[in-house]
Image 1 (cartoon, one colour):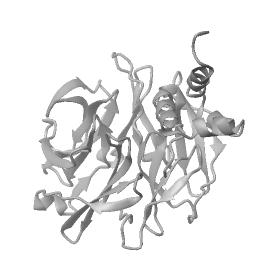
Image 2 (image 1 turned 60 degrees about the horizontal axis):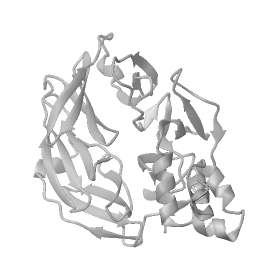
Image 3 (image 1 turned 180 degrees about the vertical axis):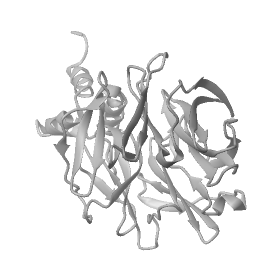
Length: 352
């Protein structure tokens, strides 16, 4: 350590600080401010921040917005701290659509505007433009947030409007939207198909596309973020005699899917993607039947190997698994009666 330059030692120490401490450290001196503002510093600090101990839960209800730490040893949340939205809103009408490396892509429901927001630094960027880009309609549009090979944070916005599909990419680097081609089956444009938000994994955004009735078509759409090419792959071979739901999860840069199916009772299996094919990892341990009226979402892994099945009204089941723990949390949009997301605290900026 004595042979290392002082600059290198300071750099190594500061990249390991919590995000909020980095913000405070910028006021120490001009040299530190310049160092902590470089893209190299932000990138390395982010890579060291994406750990389970640095994850937080953002919860939004009609009156408050709060952030809480996750206590993994008892599967609960820690004390909350109130968050003030730095942008104008009406009665907390903020929907969280996607998250990546501490950035949240959110929609203001009263104006349909899209924003990028870092709740740790409070910085935000409006993505809407006068030529009608960056406006989101629930149940028709979908969003995917990703980073390309040039470390440019981008938003993929897929729009369905009157049977016409429009696909647009926002670049943080150039601060603009552009259209890209996407040819798909005409039936996927129907509102009878539900598109999930994009899950970024291994240089690809993945979307589940599921038909909203029993025995309907279910596929996965893949978007290579560097070539900007789309392709379709099959859904895991789950029974088609009931409602089908697929929840995608990035676990240590390997794509997994919780596939749930059933009519009056629901079963859940975990699958992993190898190439373009799905391999079953496990079937859900025996649990009481889950009625269709309590149709639920898989929320997140915790570090002790448990995972949760949760409804929009609260936690329903905790399922213990005899597997090596995954340090990964799935960012749900509803849980314990709140809107919200699980995110990591970083200093990544929504704008350059």
